[in-house]
Image (cartoon, rainbow, N blue to C red):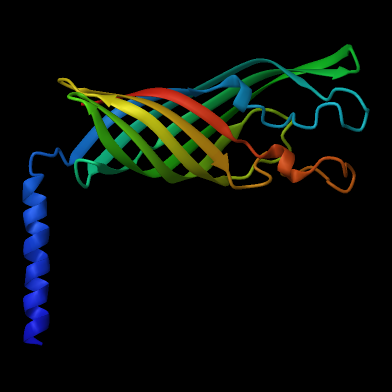
Amino acid sequence: MKRFLVMTMMVVIIAISGYSQESNVKRHNFGIGISSSLSSSTNKFLKHIGNNTFEGNFGKIDKNFDLNLSFLYEYNVSKNITIGVAPTYRESRAEINYQYESSLFGETTETIYDIEVPLFVDYKFSVMEKNKLFAGVGFSGLFNINTDSEEIATKNTFSPYMLFRLGFDVYGKHRIQFLMQYRCNLSANTYYNGIDYNMFPHIQKEYFKVNTFDVGVNFFF
């Protein structure tokens, strides 16, 4: 028992010593961010173009707009390891033209509103005195608020994502962070959850997985 207490005290002393050596690390960080998904990564339900009931084009995105606003909290475990959470409001708007062969026969506008709660861990390393590169991974839950398009029969209320992060920090009076983030959808039927797949056997749920590549800027106070 005495040996166990001695070993426990030694572990505590070592941990306190390590913590004190990084006492100059700012532990708690708060910020805001803005980002957008690259247009080529946001086609939400058009992966079956040219292979539909009519043997023609099902649709084509004419214009696309994505806007993501985030509130950020980061906790620096050390100079190199950061854990964080970034509640995000995501709005996606697309204008879609429906075609049969080369003839336009309809168009619609779809807007989707979501709240996303990503949790992540980043590893950072210095490249210059006031600059750090970082890479990280995380998990995210996407919660649908509303969808104003009749083209989507139903949309999953909750959709899980894996996150892969890469970017760099610029330190000054305040820290500015430039972020690239790949979001991998883990759900096979995030969109068009209400399609009758027996009636349209060529349409598979996997067609509606939504993987996006986001780029953005974060500002920490």
